[in-house]
Image (cartoon, rainbow over all chains, first blue to last red; front, side, top):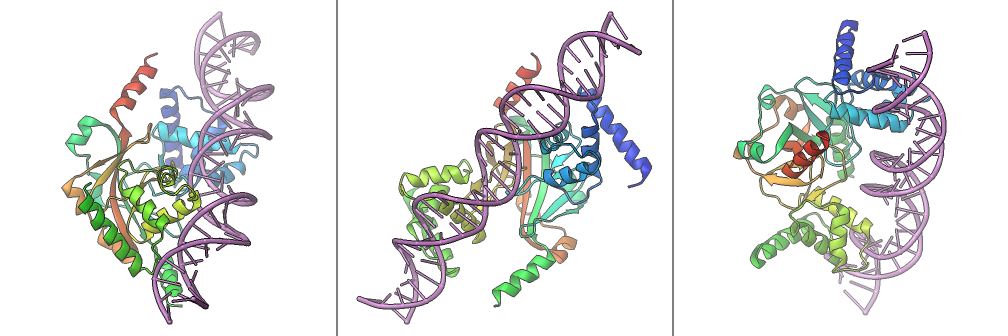
Length: 153
Length: 153
DNA sequence: AACAAAATAGTATTAATTCCTATATAGTAA
DNA sequence: TTACTATATAGGAATTAATACTATTTTGTT
């Protein structure tokens, strides 16, 4: 990500905060920056470690709260998954996730057809739909190989 | 669910266990029965409470372990979601989930088109795909109304 | 009936997340 | 610029979820 892109995103983020009457604090900015600089869908703990390098006294609670706030104002997502710790994603572009159920790594992929999937009409009448995701789960190559190794012993 | 259906499912379950060389214990059977009797996608804790009514000395650990085992052998799913406690589903028929992000209720729905979604070929070459799910998130009607109420005060 | 591998109960431990409260700060309005 | 108020934060405590450990029990098999 180049400097211009970062500036754009930050500006966008400031606007979002203002619109929601959220104060722009150094902690919020650093959490946001740490998140969008991560491509590995970090946990709160991981973001915390990153932010600590800039703000040594930041608390884990603040990071947690802030990540949830980012999610609420639409500046980030909580990655969908089955169980395990919460993982966050600051990438707002259309994309989907594959998660390895063994090593828990999350891989982005993109399939145009999946972008346009809408909730069925029946559902849209009954509920307020906020997000539609195609979520794929399985084993990554290294984990698949390990799995086989163990089974053959 | 009528008696015949229950018997069918149990028989099926026994077969699955045998194939995987898993012993058929009262705890396993009761956990499985409690799960398929629940339509609310229960947590381990909720299943535990149900099983306790039949086996008062069962431990929460056993319920947890067993639910994860059911998931592994394909007799149950862990419901996809973003964060929150693990929720389980013993319904193996094609269906999708809507989750209210506020009250955490999970609603089943079914959309034929979603059943046939496959992982893109690129992904299938790179990873071992075990599950493809369409996951929808939002607010249920009561929670949507509450949300509005609070905001207007 | 006897055996070995697997499973369980009960508890301890770890890990994740939220709650609590005193203090500090950002945005606003004088 | 200064003062004010609502919001946010740090630090720690508390809560909750999930797993690990170990002695004992049980299943499926011989």
